[in-house]
Amino acid sequence: MRTAALAAVALIAVPAFAQKPSDNDKLPGEVWTFDAAKGELTRKGEFRIHEKKVYHGEKNLGTAAVKGDEATLVVRGGGILSGRILLKRDGAGWSGVIQHADGSKWSIVVRVKEAAPKRDKPEKKKDK
Image 1 (spheres, helix red, strand yellow):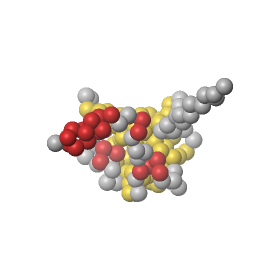
Image 2 (cartoon, rainbow, N blue to C red):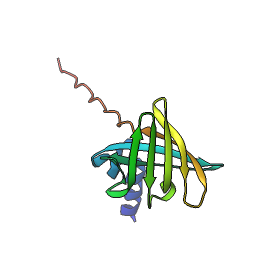
Image 3 (cartoon, rainbow, N blue to C red):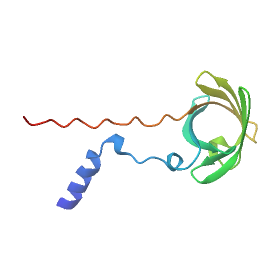
């Protein structure tokens, strides 16, 4: 009984910054985050692009083509991202629409995922 209580306390005490990086963070390519919305429905997530291909983890979801300030992603088997995604550069990110095969359309905002800030090591106090 004590072991279960200690395990529960240990799980609660783990700080939020100790979360593991996603598979996308460990694999090659640039990681992007997205916010998609259709009416009141919203979805968030991330994917990565490497050599003009769209991935989630190691799974190849589709292709990416960029021409100037416009990009087209064609995604297969990517859940909410499935379909043709038409994006235009919008400041630091991209915004546009996801056109699903069933005819529905979602708005989407895509940004490059920022690296987690590196924590400075505390300075050691010198004894006098």
